[in-house]
Image 1: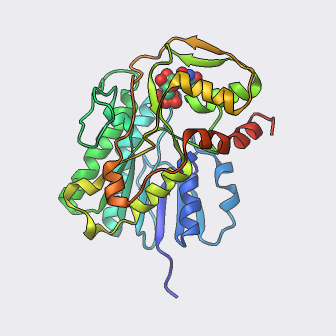
Image 2 (image 1 turned 90 degrees about the horizontal axis):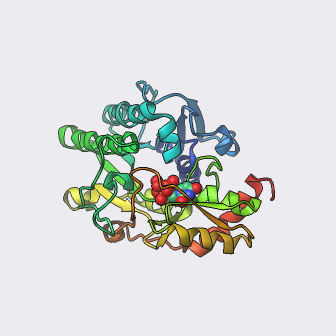
Length: 323
Ligand code: UDP
């Protein structure tokens, strides 16, 4: 029997990171989960800690990463990821995207590993094109409140492609659109967990602006499927640079007002909707063009928003203490 391939996942105790740890273990990999626990949580990986192929390492990717032995894959998933979190940790968010991605790339280069970068639809900023395809360069305010995250991800993409060009590191850049599922923090400030909690507690749902801005929400199992396919995509089947950069998300676009209504319906809530000021630079539209991902990975999401909200309700019910 050959030893399992080893994966290092930074941000492994976060929402997406912990679901990836689970999937990678189920696929037979050895998983090294690195997390500073700034926004990640031990409880997300508690059930994995006795697994013989799982190791938790507490550490911050803004410092150099030292790992003994082979590493076959590096997944750079460390970063505060909600607008509320990156507003609270602006400098650290920039540092994680910049120094953190640099250290992850250095490790991948030293170990001869494939690296998968968790990038974001935020690289498109407040887009002037809808849907957004990978060819779109984005419309980003470089000095606005969201710039600490947007520009960090743009820098992370740039340095990832630089390592690919200069050192031939095999790279995958996943531009991840809004994703939801169990283990999202109730207090992370994002629309979906905030409004789920409000609906379940019978409090008013806070819609920012007039609620006409759109987002497209992907259920976590679909996203993890796409990420796993991307990670393990045979490099030789890639056609030029295109296959290095993929949008991953669900193209089912809804207004935030519709999302609030759908959440009220799903949870049988009697809550009403209240309107609050729209945050600065809040993107007006967001919807992934996933034709490229579908071509390269044979992937597309399966879970509709209506189904996903039903699937996630027990988690949020338990999280608000009504489970
Ligand atoms: N939003 C809202 N109510 C909330 C939280 C967010 O209406 O309690 C809006 C927010 O202004 C944005 C959308 O919902 O237009 C999605 O916000 P989120 O923070 O989930 O993530 P984003 O897609 O902006 O990164």
